[in-house]
Image (cartoon, rainbow, N blue to C red; front, top):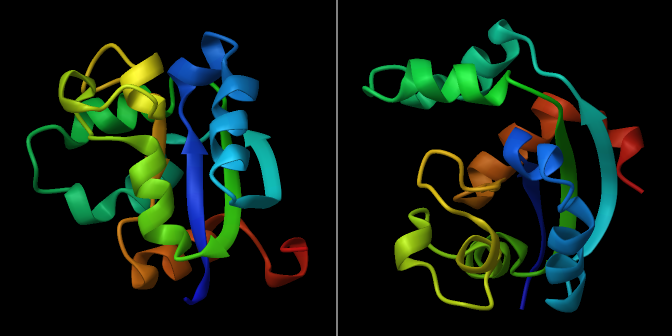
Length: 139
């Protein structure tokens, strides 16, 4: 199995509801390690650039507004098959379809405010990690 890195974002609703420690426990229990982490407030421009692949979708404006509505915690996770493992830990994008025992299944209430973001491919993980972190920050 391949050791990979993936990006995790604990979204403004997770920070606002003070459940970031609970979410991190799901990550750590899965065997993934948090090797970099920082709290930040995204600017509108940063959110637009980060979510640029969705710019033509009807939810883009709402997504940017939500992601800039409060602080987020960006993290780099590492472990065996980290991209797919974290996607399993997160659960389905729509919390109504997410299994219990997943982050979204246990903590999210709404598809637009679903607590976490995770890279959907190894290629996107590399791009997303580089967006937020310098190589020297990944320890």
